[in-house]
Image 1 (cartoon, rainbow, N blue to C red):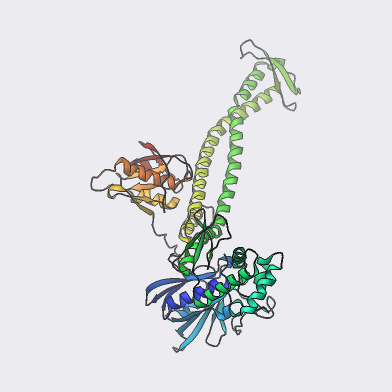
Image 2: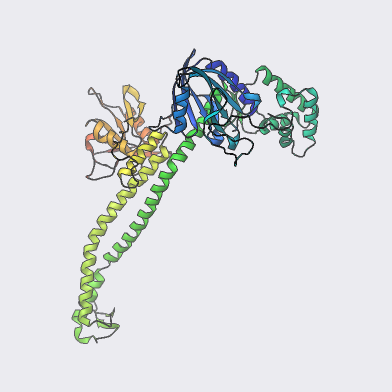
Length: 568
């Protein structure tokens, strides 16, 4: 989903009109290379997102609320130093390049007003955020580019900023009639005209080229007409934001309607900021979860693997311990037949007096021990295995509970929707001993805010749904009152759901069913058509001593079978 030159031009005009003289109240960076500006202008408060995060590089107004990390990165601190309290003068697209220039009027260190600029270069791998002073010198940048990496255009603090070198081809928006006709004819002469056309006209993306060629159907005059119409729209500000959906999900965007992709629906959006916000919101959420949660998922998955191997070994030992009666049986036979067993024998055949019919039994012996010593060794091994059986059962039970807990952590990671959620899970794993706590020595850990999901239910009731194991604990064991309803999907990881019961009003079956549907939705069984959900009063939910977060026992419960709730 790269932002092409034409879309950026339309976006720049939209942002310039919306942000003129807007004041910068706050700046923070929720993720590396992504800055959020809290602005206040003539139209009220708004948030501007400027990102240099690789393929997701973009700039637009956003309705999404991002987390403000406790420790701002150095680039964020420099942006605050130079731009906080300033005003946006203009938003432009320099020389039709794939970049945006945000001009600011801000107060410098001497208390004098000076003009600063933030350049957002949106050029694939070279995407960058660059802060300039009033003399066009680089104050800070997200990606430092030295002379070895780019001899012609290094980007480093203290150096003068230079525009990227331009290709030696006509610029699409400046091209005249003859240039457009020549480009149309030359492009159609190639075997792959969709790749040839962007190389003939600077600023025309391969994506738009494919659409124009599809419309032209191989005709030079038709292709020229399409190029002329697109050029006129771009120059007159007539380009419109179109969101491309497939199966109801955003897959791409464009500044003109797209007809060359089968199965794709075009939806016109109210503005280019709304277009980018809708298109990148879900993708950004997936990337956030992947980048922040992948390390934790690997740690937990490795712990599950070790636990599975340990449990397998313990269960094998338990099987051997459960077969210990044969050892005692053989030791008894040796004792009963001492007179008939020869010392130094590797095995012996004796009469089995303890089995009906008294058949002959074969017993393996250690030739270095006497028959009496062989029997004594078997008795000792029998006693050890008898004691081990009880310990093994206890260890296996503990291991099974730990495996259940780790499965719940993996589910919580799969459902995490923000940096706050993932940080809460990281702290939980650190407390459980699976991670080192990153807390600095002598610095108190800031407690996580308690913010369960809230859903409205019929008759004025509401459902509170935990986001993690620690939040489940807080919700069930400390916040819930004895008469509140408690719900959880049966025998699977999921969120605890509490329905507060106040003023003597009892929840109706409809309330219980909808709360159960929410519990089913926030569980690992959410993909199933029908899910069993247990419910009881909060007073019947107990936490075993020493149990991991989120692990509880409950009794006097009922079960309902529901379809997981469909939530926005």
